[in-house]
Amino acid sequence: MPPLAAELASEVAALLAAETGSADLAFVRQRDTVYFSRRADELRSAPVVLIQGICAALPRDAHFILRNQILATREPGPFALGMVKVAAKRLRVVAPAAAPRPGALEAAGLRCREVLSAEPPLLSLPSVPDAGAPATEWLRFSRSLIGPVDEERPLHARDRRVGAALVAPSGELLAAAANTNGADRTRHAELNALLAHWQRRRERLPRGARLYVTLRPCRMCAGLVWELAAAPGSVLVHFEEDDPGPAARETILHPGSALRRRFARSADELAAPGCFQVSRPAVLA
Image (tube, rainbow, N blue to C red; front, side, top):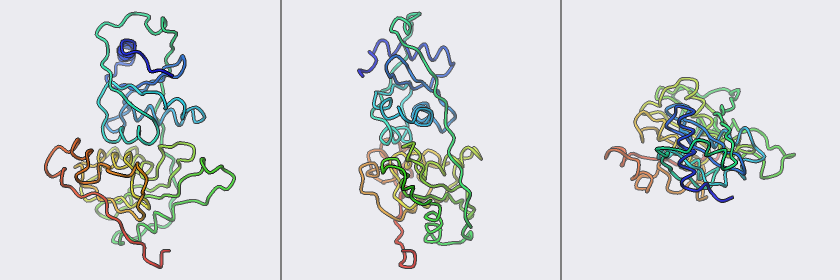
């Protein structure tokens, strides 16, 4: 489906802003419906809410809806850009029209539907390593979160076998999760754990917090780690297996990447370490 014409897109942005009172909006057209979302909080911007909300509320149609161009009224951060890479196709920033025509939506035969934020699934956790446990033990714990393969599902609908644990500098477990991306492509293990922590505590991650994940994070999850850190670049990520796929290349957690150069605000952030691969001991195999 062709994207909204530039003039109409600006008018839609202005009309939605007036209706919602929000300056941070994202919307996408599918046939005669404009699906839109507003920013949920300081972490979940409008494009994030839109993509996750569509995946959760319209799982059968999400792939087709999100192949259309997403329009946003604010420049996206690394988290939103990564989510577009993982679960959508493209995003363009549009400025709201100064004087939208009354009835512009009706004249174009369009109706609007708001999409709300979706909450991450919660796990019942197995026994947790001691506070001083080494990285290999936390990675063992992360792998223990992964459930059995659901052989009745087709391959494309199965959850990728990844687990993640978020740990405070003190060694306290903050959150843990497994991938649930079989039905919702955004629901990676890291994202589930990080958002669960955010929704429970509404606190950014302190310097020295650690994320233990069985697979190198993709651009979306790396962007979320960066944005959720109280000091971007100060959360250490330990992973077990490399991911050769394009979504995990040159993420914001890679020092020197284009994303790091774009979003780093200081020399410290530019030079901050990224991910550390931890070899799996033979006893863990």
